[in-house]
Length: 309
Length: 293
Image (cartoon, rainbow over all chains, first blue to last red):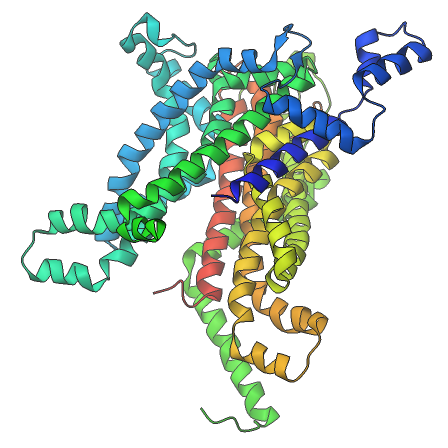
């Protein structure tokens, strides 16, 4: 758990370097094209841009810790506020997609492992192979072509917040969540299958079967619980991918989330927004994985015992 | 087993038999063969793009805008009347160049980082924290941020993706090398007084090669997906230079009437990534006897 701290530090250093890679003198940008060299130099001094890079890093890091992630030049608001404003839709999409993925993938992975080598297994594995081979923006567009343009089952694009009713909220989220969830499902299904295969060969499973427990009970209660840690790990580790995927998927469906924030920031060259957003997402990734680590104890008593000692 | 000095003759025979076995196993693995075939096809398209393209990929023709696929324009035309077949062929070139270079660069650096952190513990702590830190960024987002800072061109796409992918390779190589390091023959070498350089490059590195090759194919595949996504978002390969991703991006505005601008380059992306994944899975099964139960 302590190893989280250096990781956070590295994340901060990377973002700091990105800021410094950014072309253009921030002081010159603020003052505009008419400023003289002296004026620019004076502002550089005031902004601390002439300090040694290490001092600049410490100052910047101090600001980050206090929640000051910079200022959006274009939106004229703090980056943190802009991020929080846009977080809702992205979170909604990511959670919906994740639930969809888990509900489909875990049973699919279990079935594939249980019927290993049969047609069922092959069909599921082929599906997951397609799932990991298609970029989500493409899947999103294809879903729009089929289900929105051709069949007209779902709206083409748009977003309604939860406050306008659960049904309407979900209606607009079905296609984006499907596009995002499919890839996630493919990943989880593959890990579930592999993990279940490991467990199903174990002696205690044979014992459980031998003492007359029904197959379904053995699979869902004994095997799944033991196979769950790798599944949980992949769910946690793919969180970053899920958010990144949500960012891309949003642009296809015009959902006003983090994706839109980033894309607009790129077009307006609003660098602090990009950097601040990427920093926040990386931080949340680290936190989620920390939570996943802590959750291992729920599924594996050995972890709990180890921790107590 | 007794360790007797073997005659060169019998070693050669064993090697020949092993090679035969590998080839037979390869031919038996349809997924691997299919993937390899498609990859060769894409490689040929990329290398001979100027010969294969039927039109100039940049030539604008206002009289032939948004035509569906037909005899003159095999894959139709875009909003500006440019021939999509030629643009997709050149796009194949871009994707293959980016994917291959990223796979090469990140395999190279990933191998070095992985090997050395497996070998030196202090270095391991430092390098692995950096790797963890870099891996905390979702690949696409880190690439977006790097591209936004460095500017858009095919070279920067390659650099950005290599930065994103190197940690992934380094991780895998490190864990493979850690296992190899504990083998008896390495211990024996150490007892014989082999230097660290010799140990790492002559004895540990060759044993990580099969893992490296498999990682190479996966990184290649992921790079194609990310490059396409970046270009689709408008931060990858800049227009008018053709790439699969930016053709689909241009097709998004006209998706109602011109499905071919989305579906055809999309099929190229899926096919190439699928082929790489099949090839990678096949290689893994072929090279790693433990994965195949």
